[in-house]
Length: 461
Image (cartoon, rainbow, N blue to C red; front, side, top):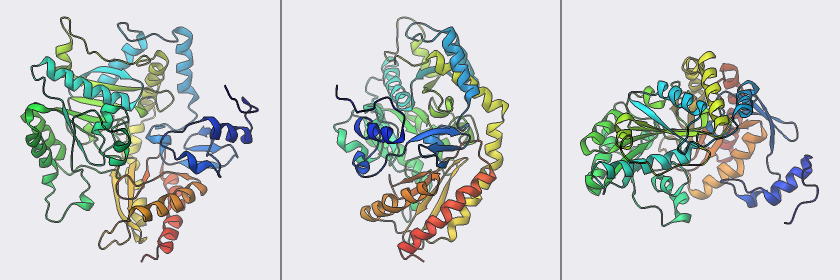
């Protein structure tokens, strides 16, 4: 094995050398760091993180929508260390252990309706993959073996495993891995800012019914949707949207999957996004905030009705992951849920979300700001060339704007957020749930001058 000189040393220069030589970062243009430093985060406390040079950043993305309680929660991490002394690991393949049992019961106590069966995974993509596989096997066991297709929304991200990728509606993420698992079908998302002229809002839900009829109801297994769609910029549902989706799923015996990898555990001010928008899915997928990102964990939560065919006789859900329900991660998740309750985190989000939103709305006087949308601590700003016509940027312009200026400038000024063009260009903010008005002022102190400079560079307004 070829090694880098000084391997094991923690100096900044050595870390840079080793990162560039050995670390393959996810969703990263590795060539971008040929002549520049890799951003290396070495410490976190509260809503802030520090790089290897000692520079502080406000973590306006909660790392990746998941450090809900902020950083440095040694008290929660200690629950994992204590668990490791008692039982470091045992599998949930045909066995159980106390923390997995307790966590499953605790999660079920927070879910809406009869979503009582908790199938643990190691993360969000695995949770989605599990839900899609469960839907297929459920229909086979209930006499509908041809129900294999899944309806998802355009520009939606549901994960990177091959099944989940077939539901993901972002073309550039799909093309390198085609042919995908068959069955992914897509309908319009709820970007009402760009609703085609003459198209009623009600058509967004009806498009799901039309697609099911087009594919053939006997072939459609599930509909999967996020309560607030992440990719494209936090698309919220119109009034009555999810209630109509529920009716359509019931009409055609199609399972409704609420993908809450981001939207659960207080991100929208509720335990689950389905509760905020008052609908009852058949399956919920979750991850990220379940442990506050202190340990990797996810879960698929199924209703009693969907689980029932697997609960008697010789039937088995033929699926699993080695580390799912890991005792250490489960102990950390239990401590995290305790913290959400004891620190009244959900109440804090509901009390302060309007302050975050008002701050973002105040930026509408900047010519490049076209739309502001989202819910809870999950918000986006869509960037435009012309607010009157809503004209967006072409691919080259978006590349220059986002990667050539905004991403680096925001980071350089100490704000971590996401400048994204999976869809139209947006800036996404998903701050830790412990953030408050003083932190929103800090965010504005970076966003406003950077967006004003972007407008000047583009000669807008």
